[in-house]
Length: 191
Image 1 (cartoon, helix red, strand yellow):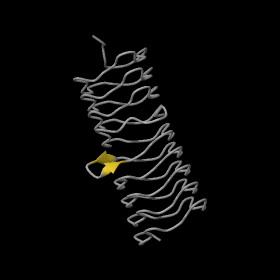
Image 2 (cartoon, one colour):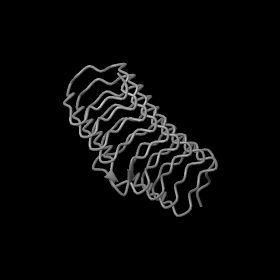
Image 3 (cartoon, one colour):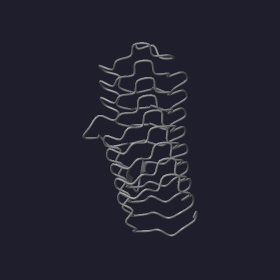
């Protein structure tokens, strides 16, 4: 089933668990409340797609294109989003309220991420080597997050919960940690 042209398709509330949709074009599709648990979405085009309330538990989203995609309240627990480009000149992906507990976002680019209306939940996520330059992670739940070698240059981490996070070799120049909870943080010594 991979490599399909599924642009503008309505998959709302559909059960697509375990589906092989790798290299497919799902741009501007409605995947709200869809069950995509363990689905292969590698190299998928999700530009403008609506994934609100979607179950993406364990889904493979490596190298997916997600410009202007909406992930409001989506469950991305244990999802693989490595090499992801989630923001930039074409707009921003909305991760409002998304649960990314244990998600692998290694190498993800969240630079310039806009402020969210709700608190981002990223506890236990793998953000190693992620590009988080100028990302707004204010009040984010970043407990036990792997941020090794991540670029947090200029990131806003005001009042974020970083308990137990690993910041070994992370670039933190200009990052704002005002009010952040930093107990048991590894690899970072606040000034």
